[in-house]
Amino acid sequence: MSARRALTSTLLEGADGALVRRTTLPNGLRIVTEAVPGMRSVSFGAWIGVGSRDESPRQTGAAHFLEHLLFKGTRTRSAWEITAPVEAVGGEMNAFTGKEYTCFYARVLDDDTDLAIETVCDVVLNGRLDASDIEGEREVILEEIAMNDDDPSDVVHDVFMQTYYGVGPLGRPILGTQESLEALSPQAIRGFYRRHYVPSAMVVAAAGAVDHDHVVEQVRHASAAVAAGPAEPRSRRLARRAPSTPGRGMRGIVHRPSEQAHVVLGLGGVHRTDERRFALGVLNAALGGGMSSRLFQGVREERGLAYSVFSFVSSFADTGYTGVYVGCLPDKLPEVLAVSRDIITDVAQHGLSEDEVRRGKGQLRGSVVLGQEDAGSRMSRIAKGEMLYGEIPSIDNIVERIDAVTQIDVATLAADILREDPTYAAIGPFDELPA
Image 1 (cartoon, rainbow, N blue to C red):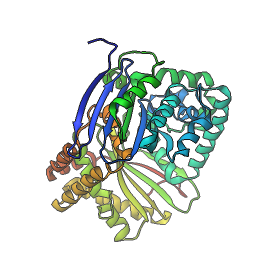
Image 2 (spheres, rainbow, N blue to C red):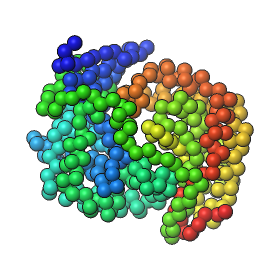
Image 3 (tube, rainbow, N blue to C red):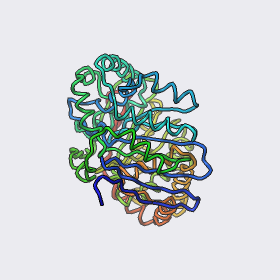
C-alpha cells in the first residue's frame, strides 16, 4: 500500500447505532470519530500528547503557556476571529492542560461542524506566537497563578504533588510559578511548540452528528501544510519521560491564617493501563466516592467533622495514587485525621463488604454509562482511548470488566495500596500536623 494513502478502520459498532472509526493520515495525524444517531451537536477536539510532565525544570509552565498563547492568533486569524464566529453560532471553544496531554476543543451544532474543525486545527497547527502576544499573555497567566494561590483548596493539591513526587516533572505545578513564567523566553516557547505540536503526537477526535469521511477531508485540508512523518510509537514517547517515583510518609505543610484546614492524604495507586484500575474504581467509590461512602458517613454524617470529604484516584502512564481530601475547621483536624486513618486501616485489613462492593460497582457502572449522554464525553473517551490507553473498548466491554471485579479483588488491592505510610499535604493556621 502506498505510504501516501490514509489508513482507515472501523473500531466499534455500538448497539445504539454509534460507529467509531479511525484514520491515520500520511503525516502521522490520527483521526477518530464516533457518529451517534439522533444527536444534533458535535464535539471536536485536538489532543496533543504533551503536558507539564514533558517540561524540563527551565520550561516549567510552558505547556500551559502555549494553551493560552495559541488563542492569541494564527497566520490568518486574530484572537477575535478565533472565538467570535464560534460564539456567534451558539458554540463554545476552550482548552485545558494536564500533566501528560493538552486539549483544544469546540462544541457546536451539527450545521457548524466545518467551522469548529477549521478553527481548532488552525489554532493548534498555525500558532502565530508573536513576541508582543507572549509578553501580554505572560501577565494574564501570572494573574491566574495569583488567583489559584488565593484558593487553598486548589493549592493543597499542588502541595501534595510536590510532596509526593518531589522535584520531578509530576511534582511541578501545571501553571508553573512566577519565577518560571518570568524566565520563559519567546525562543523557548516557540521551540517547545515546534518540538511537541507535531502530527505524530496528535489525535483529532469528533463525536456526535459527524460523518467520518467528511471530518477526515476537513482535517486533511487543514493540516496539509504540516510536515509528513510516521507516527512515533507510544512506547517511545513514554520512554522520553523521566520516571516519577512517589515518596512514602512525606509531609508538606503550608502555614496560612485561614478559617479552614485543607488536607490531602495520599496512598498507593495503579498506573493508567493497570487492569486493577477497575477494582480500584470500585474501592474508591465505596471508600469516599459518594454520600454513602465510608469516609462521608464516618467523617461528616456521623460526627459532623467536615463539610467536604471525598476520595479520588489519579493515574498516569507509569504511576498513580489514591487520595483523600478533607476541608474542616482547624481544631477538628486531629479527630478528622484519626477517623480517616481508622477507616482506611479497616478497609486495608478487612476489605469491603459484599454490599459495599455491589454499590461501588453500580456507582462506577452508572458513571461510565451516564457519561456517554453528551457528545463532549464521547469525544473525550475516544481521544483518550486512542492517545493514552492504546484501545477504545465498547461501553459494554467496560461494564463487563467492572462487573467482573470480585470482593477478593478489592480486598487484595486494598491490602496492597492502603497499608503504606500515607503522605500528607496540608494548608492552615498550623506549622505541623497532629501526630
